[in-house]
Image 1 (cartoon, rainbow over the protein chains, first blue to last red):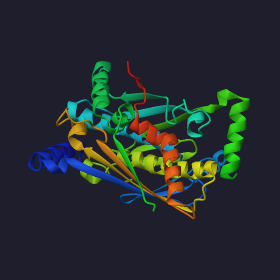
Image 2: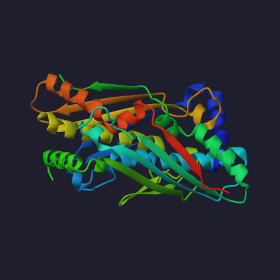
Image 3: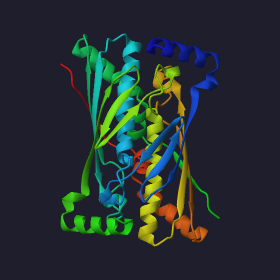
Length: 165
Length: 165
């Protein structure tokens, strides 16, 4: 299905049955090595691991790397959808993302340091036949509608339950 | 390297040379299909895609799924490290995470709806020979030090630059 058709189909679906706009994503995982985690996300199996310096075997990218994979890919896909939506021709998109992390937080060596990223930088390069102004318009629309950018930049309510006892 | 050794080595390293606590993660990606993004994270190549209903080919898990992969795996690994740190025996950890998303946000059908997760639920099941109280202690320590949990629950400063013009 084309992106235009996917957008129109989604609009028809959500208009006809508003409850279908609410989606629940689910991922299940288990530790299968010192730092290796095998996860299932829908029909996909994903392996996460740490580097040997952290006791892992490098069997997969690490959790912070996966957070940046989520962000970079979400940016690229959001540019695709919003280009279609806004009628902006888009030949390619590349995305480079960086996240700064201070390991004093994770290890608890200094509890004044947050364990997560202290800063994230995104550099996006859209290309195609349009003017720079049109791509700036696209970037602003993408930033306002990118799910993973939103969930990093703004707080998400998280509830944790424990299966013991 | 064992987890205990990795912790002690990291402590020695950060004590000797505090600047080494600051790590920069980087991921690069490019759109290679309607919704497919090929990414490089260190030595790992990861493919992200959407389902056919969104114009993709299901070549990989989607960006919101990768955000949950990052969260679930980070929880499991943080339990591993903090169990070692606190001297709590830990035989296994399984993690199930769910994220609620309202597609009205991403598609801009309703700009009062945020594009990211509106809520996230984490269910962790650690097991081993310790008392439930010890695993509750572990869970509290893990929640306080889990990098990806922190970056979802609390805002991260994000800067975006654009490569046009």
